[in-house]
Image 1: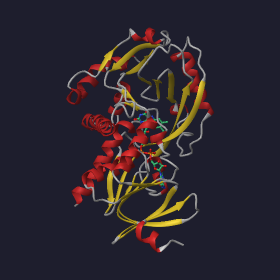
Image 2 (image 1 turned 90 degrees about the vertical axis):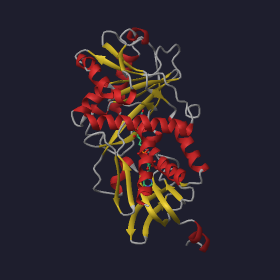
Image 3 (image 1 turned 30 degrees about the horizontal axis):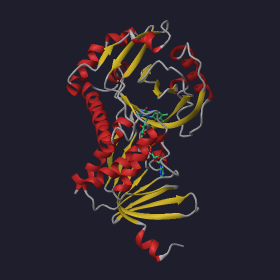
Image 4 (image 1 turned 45 degrees about the vertical axis):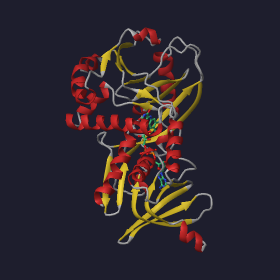
Length: 379
Ligand SMILES: Cc1cc2nc3c(=O)[nH]c(=O)nc-3n(C[C@H](O)[C@H](O)[C@H](O)COP(=O)(O)OP(=O)(O)OC[C@H]3O[C@@H](n4cnc5c(N)ncnc54)[C@H](O)[C@@H]3O)c2cc1C
């Protein structure tokens, strides 16, 4: 039974946010930056943020040529430019808010690997550069085939390299720790180990019901408005939301002496991506090897995909280098029919910020900013 004091002091807030991923925390921070008097609670089911935001590969990217070409098949040019612009702005906001040193942001640039039969991607560089010119004011993508051998890739397989100087990389763990620190500095309360099982919107406010994993207790919190920032796990709370989970697999090698490349790398429309982390290689993707099996919120490693990734490492990326896998993990993203995130007010007191796809590091802070603006427009 709750005490009189607990009932008085711990259960009522102006704003409650479900999910302490990059979107949930950025939303809380953006609201507090606009109105310091807001009493905000973020509720997280894990012992710490436990969704895609702590499982990702730390690419600060905006979309490769092949990804943007694929997007052009399902989105208009205007929509794509607006989306890339939000990723660019989101990353700027994240870096400004947290500081490059604090999150180990490094702008080593990014490269797309082009294989035999994919030459049409290179032919589209000019078209994609023209499309993105209003954002960057200069060409984003240039060919750098001379780096293929220098990086040590298999020159029989990799035919071209497309370079993008604007891409960067960061330390995902540090980014999320810093976001939590920033939230704490601003007086935002974050409770962990509490899963929201349901909520009820009423005329006088929203009742948010949690199950506390440690105590096995159920609590009812109250707020004026609720933000649902649960990304791939949203269907547990809002059945009709238009998204599908997609599991992503990542592995990291042990340090490799004399590692020959630095930067972030992608291929096959972003389905594969790798980067250096110091002298280790972080390699992720391969969801396209078994789309149906990977449409899940179960964070289990998949043997088939790990084997596929290891084979790519041996045959394409590190053909001349001995390496050992040090660790592997899986995380869950959320996808829709196109790359547009869902950022909207769903009813009087309920707001939704989900479906960030595979580039949430860049766009996440911007989504938080947009969600926060909705309540101030409302006021
Ligand atoms: C393997 C992998 C690699 C990736 N690599 C990159 C990359 O390199 N660059 C990039 O830009 N993006 C990458 N992404 C995508 C990026 O991580 C996501 O787009 C972004 O983190 C989504 O943030 P979010 O806050 O919306 O969701 P999440 O981080 O998933 O946050 C949702 C939070 O809600 C919590 N939650 C869910 N349900 C409840 C509930 N009922 N009650 C309480 N809490 C709940 C979860 O525990 C979680 O902490 C990758 C994703 C994965 C999985």
